[in-house]
Image (cartoon, rainbow, N blue to C red; front, side, top):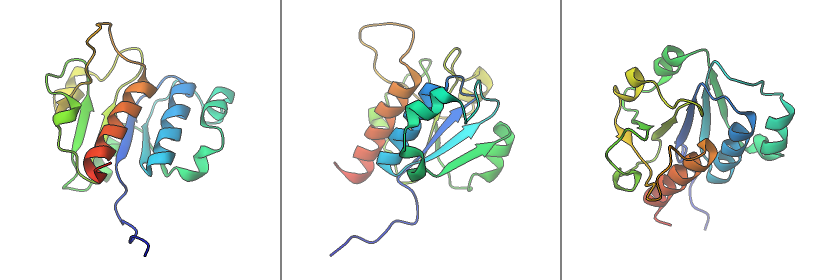
Length: 158
């Protein structure tokens, strides 16, 4: 017997002012295979019809529910009152594995070159990914994939 469909998506991946078409294409592919919705907050550093974006997303875009916003306020205005938004940042102290994700949570990532601005990350619960080898940060698509799959694992019990 098939499981009933969930009205709420597994989760939402939110990219604030993304700069690289290839990264966004790869994040879209991750959203497609997870059943997550993708939210893009302008401005972008590329066009959604960019060749690099199309090459990265391949034919996965048809499986992605994509939302675009003119800016942070536009995005924030559409959030349901009970929405939980987690900002991912190297400035966080709490690891993503301890978040206790729930179906429908929003995972927010900043632009590749600078991350989330302080005013935004300081207004939200912050999570980080372990980087035991050091370095400034992970690639956006890699970080979003790690976080999204951990959220899925916590929600679905994989």
